[in-house]
Image 1 (cartoon, rainbow, N blue to C red):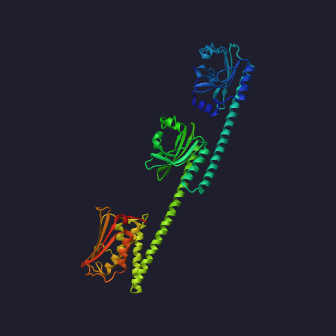
Image 2: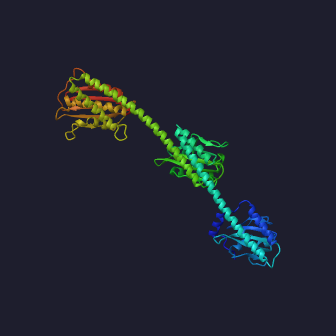
Image 3: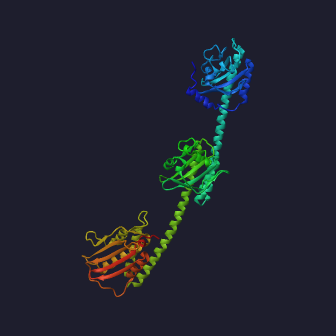
Length: 542
């Protein structure tokens, strides 16, 4: 009965030794030569038994470096408490049909010392083999020497494992230091760069160089997440640039993972089911392994940081973390640039609007003082007009808005005259967007009309009221807004002998802000003011 070579615990320990398929080493080679000499045999082997084969770390007098388990005698040493000695392999039922016994090299004698680790598990054996039977087996000194040499092999395996561990830790330490240094370098450079293109190329170069890849870069995705545009990438000499626009569908089914914001780790694009069907496409651009790190803003993937290797490779977790760290830092740098650009734009906008506001205040103050009959009247008129301007600003800047509807601007300007129970203001019309350029002038116009109505017209009596309505006419070459102010129930009105500042403000404010026309008539029932302006003029912002 064959021993259980597939014991998971034993195989894990064998794998942890890191010895399988390594190059010959002098220490192991010396031990098999010593074993062969002491035991006076033509063959000596350090045999390690895996789940599907036996592999020889050191061999003397034997051509093959491994055999299948059907040809293995050493597998029987796995369950032996001491030496396994078979004087005649043709007479033992376990080995008489072994291909190495029935055919070349027709071995006849076997003696193996188990390679037992500190856990008690056997990894293989140090064995000696002869082409002739040995009925008496080994002498006691030979057997003792074989045991001691096997223990020495275990010592070599343990020392070698420890050395490998130390070397791995050293490589990891060097890698960690290299990556930390690269991140410091990235931070220093990002502070001095002034464009998005410079930042992405800088990050790509540092990632590619640090991870020893042949290509790295950053691309921005379209709204649908189907296309990626690469303005520029970093490559090693001999690697073609991927600058330009690419469809994810041309490279397999990698798009959904990118859209979800998942890192795409492909050790081999030719074997991964998401890309295997496009292996020729990847071969044409010299990609054997790929690492994609999506960049997201507000839950949507907006960019992709990619790293390509010409040959398949296992991307280590620390390498993936490094690439993501770089992507995050570059994205933060891009965000800082855009925030600075937005702040500069807002500063310019604020300066422009302040100048416009101050110019309007100056004009209103000058005209108010020029037409006032006394100081108190001037103060009251100026105060009310500035309040109307303030209300317009409040409407425009409520929360994050920079524009408002025509109804909202109108109601805001007329709020101090409104009496909902009496129905003195009747305002209605379709939705019309009012841009920041027109809103303040429109609020002042409404204020002037309401002030005159309160003094002399429809709002000066208890029964009077004002109807403000508007329509949009789309029959001409461009949409036109027609706004009508009509007073009802006031005292009889007559046209003034001369136009005051309010009338001039209405006409000039409309002309300047809307590019339209105004018509004022004095009907027996009250003043009617009709405003006609292009919809585009009313909707325009600064």
